[in-house]
Image (tube, rainbow, N blue to C red; front, side, top):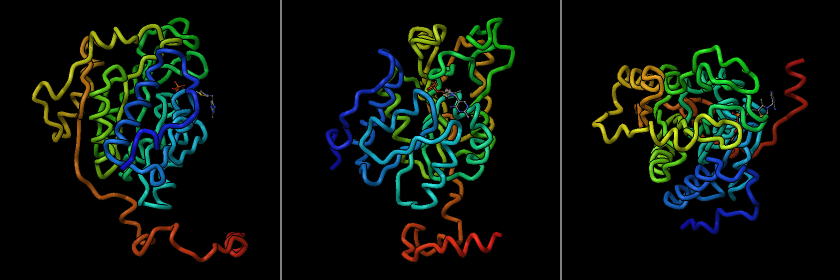
Length: 288
Ligand SMILES: Cc1ncc(C[n+]2csc(CCOP(=O)(O)OP(=O)(O)O)c2C)c(N)n1
């Protein structure tokens, strides 16, 4: 049985006091214990950003990659060894800005990967520039006269491009976060969990109180996550209501073929189980 002491690590998080990342870290660790996810079989892959330091604070395998390249790395890990639990994480900048092209195509492929996006509606690590999910009109360091673009809708994009578990939760609600993350890890296919996360230092607009006054749970409203078009429509409620209502919960869930299970090269065994060393020189020669 996995105990909390197995996944705790003697490393103090470098986040600002009150940062939503603390809650996300705690929720993930609790889920790992509840689901008995063994650290030796779990890899947390991240990009660059405040959020992306999280793999340093859990005793699993971890890989902090390049900015925006979280998903290609996570998919490479999955293809190398499907037996691993692969949890990828990004910020809204990393995932929906620099990494958006990967996001689209990884949704299409439907890898069995859990993707947690710490959506604080700002570039945190670089101290407060607008991100793709910053509200239109909001003044930030990079938009002193207000954001001119309309907001990126991560949930609609995930559904349209083929993700099979699409959910949103809130870093101020530990119970909800745990349930949604647990469902995402249990799900067989690509799951996006967009986590609304206050950045207490660089986003003074989307505060804990601001969210608490607006979020409501889909599951309390008889919502069923099995209707593709209804899910897309629901994912626009925050934008359409001018942020008076922000639904959280499971928007969409479906079953679909998993990309890595259809690769003919992996029919017999995992890539890491092939014992023959790769002939690098021969391979290079072949391509020259
Ligand atoms: C290719 C590249 N472009 C830009 C940067 C600078 N940079 C580092 S972190 C970051 C933004 C991080 O914001 P987000 O992904 O939202 O994560 P947060 O820090 O808010 O958790 C940027 C632009 C970089 N490291 N690499």
